[in-house]
Length: 276
Image 1 (cartoon, rainbow, N blue to C red):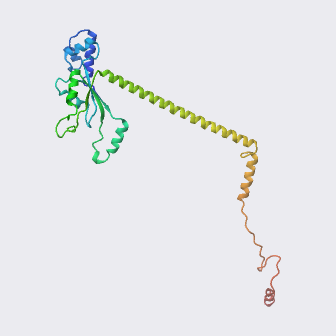
Image 2 (spheres, rainbow, N blue to C red):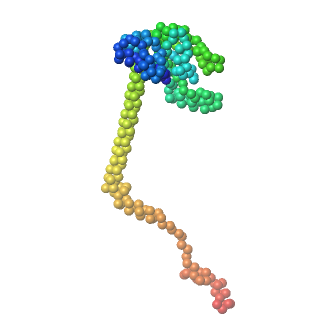
């Protein structure tokens, strides 16, 4: 979200002024050493800031409460720099959260919202070279259309600006560092809590396994389930259950009679006739 196009050259020039202890502006050799980029501040302003040995009390910061879609730091710089005597030094736009970005991109899968998948910003801060100009720009543009042509995506968007009195850029960086440190501490606390829960669960599992193992050993010693007697009884039971019993019929001898049973009388008459 930073617009660092002019940040490094200005800081380098300030360091050069502080190191030399002079109040003169940047020379052509210094500008050449910085890649040919011309400073956005005058030699007089640079000398004043370098003489004070700090960021300078002349700078002012404006808070941007609303960033419309498809708005970039470069566009904001161009729009605000168009104001009279406005020297925009640094810009920072805070990107939207990961969860909000995922939800918006998930809802933009349909064709009607296909163009709503780009990067968005929620708020921003703009540093001006003169706090009086910053205050005037904020009061003048607040609640007014951002302008542009009718085809512009920001034609109907309104500025939401507020001048931050006694607020300097290092306050923003300090707040950002504090937020990062707090986030890192929260993440470390979550990691420690997860490790503690994992270790507690593992200890409980190991304890349950040890109790079960000891219980089985005691049952084997007492003749309970798992002992030799129990295994033999189970084996006999399994063998008995596997046996199958069938109903047996009496053996039938030759002539159709069962063993130990006399033949009927009509069979004897037939034997006399046929001589059998």
